[in-house]
Amino acid sequence: MLFKEFIKINEEIWHSYFRSFFKQMLLGRISLDKGSILFPNIMLFTETKEHYIMELLGANKFYNELKTKKHKETSTAKYLYQFESDHTNSEEYMFYCDSLGTVLKNLTLSRPFDLEMLNKRFKVSGQWPGSHLIIDGTGNGSLLGFGEKFKSLYIDNCVLVNRLEEIYRVKQVTHMVIVNKNYSRIAYEDELKNKLNHPISSTNDLFGIQYCIGTKTEALILSGQFASTFLIPGLRETTIGEFLNQNPSFIKKALSCKSFLYEQDFKWIEGNPDLEEKTINPDLMLQREDGFYDICDLKTPKLHEKKLVKGRHKRRAFVSYVDEGISQLANYEEYFTFQANKELSKAKYGVEVVDPTLYLIVGNYENLTLEETREAARKLKSNYRIIDYDTLNALFLNNTLN
Image (tube, rainbow, N blue to C red; front, side):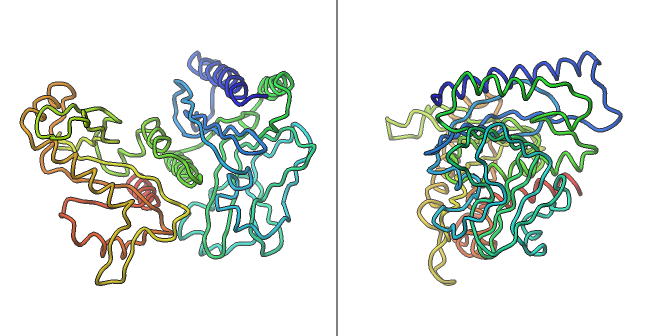
């Protein structure tokens, strides 16, 4: 089966599945005693050396469509483990998949862990689904292995708790399909249709759809989805940006804005001597309560980097990757100081920028601590905010639940 065939099959079948279920809800043919249903809104397709992977991301009460995003990874083990594959020192798997049509549903899987350490980063571990299975041993590596006879695996509403020494990363899976590249296109299409077309007697029979009770649970699910997204090794910032765009409540709560514009082009009318730079393209323009806009740019978390700062205390500075983001924000801010540019942005988008806060989202708890960020940012103007992805996630939860 070709990668493009795998993508097309999933797009067609999953869209039909979600659209049909949502239509039945709107017509009142499906009712819930209490609680609500959350639909995904992104399909992330990943090609590894051995397999094709489709993972559903996002959590929204309404179903409109599934945005397709593509990713490439060296190995399936790295995708599932979330750390570099050269850190793996164990081939003791919780599940060794060597057949077709295997389903893992409503499970939390892990090696032994320190609950206190885990909760420092993932404060919602008590909300994880189903039975908790722990494999003995102190090794590192993927909890799932794949044999030569493996064809397909379906993971639904499961959590994978991964650990490298004292660092934890968690993958909260709404739904994931992993298939062998040599699996027949026709056989896979028939298998997927059969999985999704069985009778539904309760929410436990659903695939890729999450049932929750209360706004707190909704927030915890969305927070988990965001963490699972930015902790995918090597994921491009455009996919992270698409997640925020498709799940707008997240950024509205996290950065306390009324609304936002995503990846809009603003044409240079005056003030730019570089003729090749026709426009600026901020990732997010955030509307404040006073109606004016702040500016936000997204960089990747750089999960493989140990530090995003350099130097000791007195010479603490950001690495060039972060500095590039800061320079980009400075360019965006300067754009809105020229009258012709201001008139265009107001006329075309209703955007006015006055005393903007400049947000750069980059890094994570592992490579950008709060104190090191403060020290490296001492040279910046007071309107800059350097925020890592874990802190952004914590802001969302705090502003939603408190």
